[in-house]
Image (cartoon, rainbow, N blue to C red):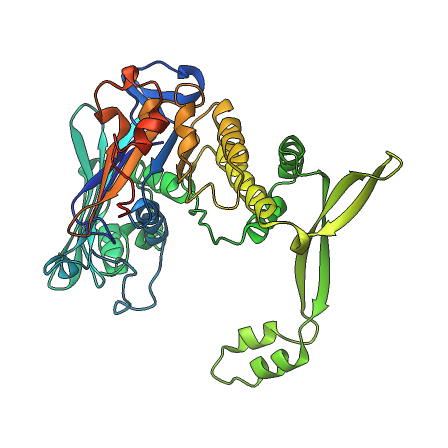
Amino acid sequence: MIQEFSVRNFRSFKDEATLSFEATKDTTFEDTQVVTVAPQVRLLRFAVIYGPNASGKSNLLLALDFLRRFWFHNPKTMDDAIDVDPFLLDAHTPTEPSVFKLVFFVGETKYKYELALDQHVVHREELSYYKTHQPTLLLERGLEQGQSTLKLHSSLKVSRAVLEALTVKCLPNMSFFAARKKVNCTLALVDAARDWMQNGGMPVIEPDTEMFEYANRKLLEDVALKDYLIRFIRRADFNITDIKMRKEEAQWIDSIKNLVNGADELPQALRDAFSSDKKIYQIHTDFEHTVVDDRGEPQHYMLPENLQSRGTSRAFGVEAGIYTAIKKQCFLPVDEIDSSLHPEIVAFVIERFLQEKGRSQLLVTTHYDPLLSRVDDLFRKDSVWFTEKEANGSSSLYALVEFKGLNKIRSLQHAYRNGRFGALPNIY
C-alpha cells in the first residue's frame, strides 16, 4: 500500500507536493477504509482531490503514472529521451531534475523510493527499507561522467560479477528495475519491492480512456468480472440485464498484407506474421436491454457497444478497473471520476469500493462538490485533498484536515463553495 507520494519539478508542480494516505486518529469507518499495515501505521484506502481546472489535479495522477511506466521501460538506446516534463514557467526548473518520492508497504515492510532525473539521464535512484525506525539503504544509483554507478547493500550478498552486469545493463536513461529484469540473480528485499512496483499499481483512467476497450481486456482476463459488472449495472439502473461477448475472426486486408510484405526494412519475422493464413480477432461486447412493451410484458433486445451511451461506457470501464484493483489488492487512480457519470452513480461507485475490505486503494479527482456533503457519511475527512494554482503558475496541494474547526462546520460543501478551503476558480 502507498503511504505517501511526493513530486517536485514535474509539470505544474514546481515545489515539492506530498499526498499522504496516512490516517489521522479519527476512527470513522475504521473497519473498511483504514488498514493497519504495521504497528502504529494506519493507511487509508481512498482519497479524493478537488480543485479548479488547470490546478494540478490531473498532473498529480500523471506523476504517479509516470513512475509506474518508467520503472520497467526499456529505451532502445542510451540517447533516447526520457518522457518527463519539468515545470516550464520558470527560468531555472526546465534544466533541473524532476524528483519523485514514494513510501509504500509490502506486507509489513516499509520501503522508500527516490528518483531524480531529467529528459536525458537519471541523476539519482535510491531504495531503502525500514528494519527499525531508521532506513537501510538497499540500492544507491548515481551518475558519473555520463555513466550509471551502482551500490547495493552488503546484506544482499551480490557478487562482483552480478554488480558489474547490473551496472552495464543500467543505461543512464532507464530505471535500475528495468535493468534488473535483464540480469539473472536474486536480490531478496529489492525484488520484493520490484514485484510490488510491477503489480501494485494500475494505469490511470483518464476522461478520454477508451472504456469499452479497457473493460473488454479485463473481461478476457477474468470471467468472474462479467457477473460483477452485471450486478453493478443492474443496481445502477442502466436497464441492462446481461452482457455477451463475441469474437469475430477476419483475415488481414490484402492491401495491408502486401504493404507489410513489401517493406524490406521490416524484420522477416514480422513480415511472416502477416502471411495469408494469419487472422485477426476483434472482441465485441453486446448488452441485453430489458424494456416493457405496451402490454406490460418484458422484452429483451441486444444492442452493440457502439450504441451505448458515453455514461454507460464510462461506468462499465471504471467498475472494471475497480474490480481489478480490489481483486489484486492494488492502487487505482481515476482522473475526473465524474466525467460522463451522473452524480448519484459517482457516489454509488465510491460506496461500492469502500464497502470492500483489503489493501486496495482508490485515488480520484473530481469537480463534484456535493460529495463533500457525504463526508463522515460515505468517507472520512482525511480522505479529502485540494489543489490550487499559485500566482507563479505552479500547483500546490493541501489536505482538508489542515483546517481547524472542521467539526463546527455544518456543511463542508457550502464552506467549500464559499471559499473557506480555497481551490476554486477565480471568476471575475
